[in-house]
Image (cartoon, rainbow, N blue to C red; front, side):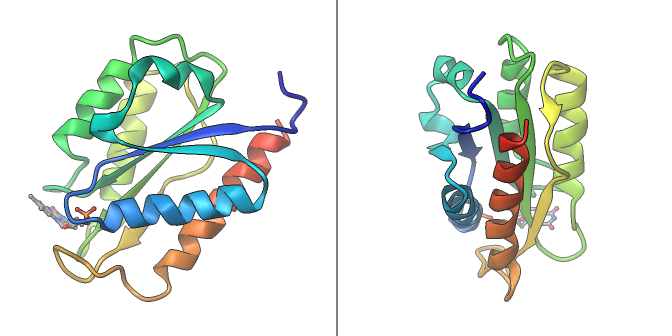
Length: 158
Ligand SMILES: Cc1cc2nc3c(=O)[nH]c(=O)nc-3n(C[C@H](O)[C@H](O)[C@H](O)COP(=O)(O)O)c2cc1C
């Protein structure tokens, strides 16, 4: 569609204390470094119909009680109503303690079940925070940027 030159990505996240938002911002830095065009949107600011303009949707949630937030679950369910065939997705979470990748895996499963037209670009990114309100553990932010770069490179290669 765009010859692999321009890829448009939207990053939608929920964040109670700002850590998942910070992760989203770092992913975006990575996307921009590779020349992707990207929009950032908090869950409640998301203009649902504009989602169709993007090649890829990234969805981020803090781990709340072992999974994504209720808001993110509802958002995924709503995506099922859009025609998203041929578009791509990836997810990310923030977690504390032992819940590495738990919310990410649940989001991936929910998307595959409820929005089957969306295809996964990369396996989800799970970022550790040191307490309920953060901060993000040392070394984790670099992974976010790499994740953004990896996704954009893959989207560009089709
Ligand atoms: C209501 C609530 C439930 C939580 N439950 C879990 C949990 O089950 N497992 C876990 O690893 N972290 C849990 N956490 C910690 C969150 O993952 C942490 O607060 C979050 O990553 C911070 O992200 P944010 O700044 O974007 O809100 C919980 C936090 C809240 C507020």
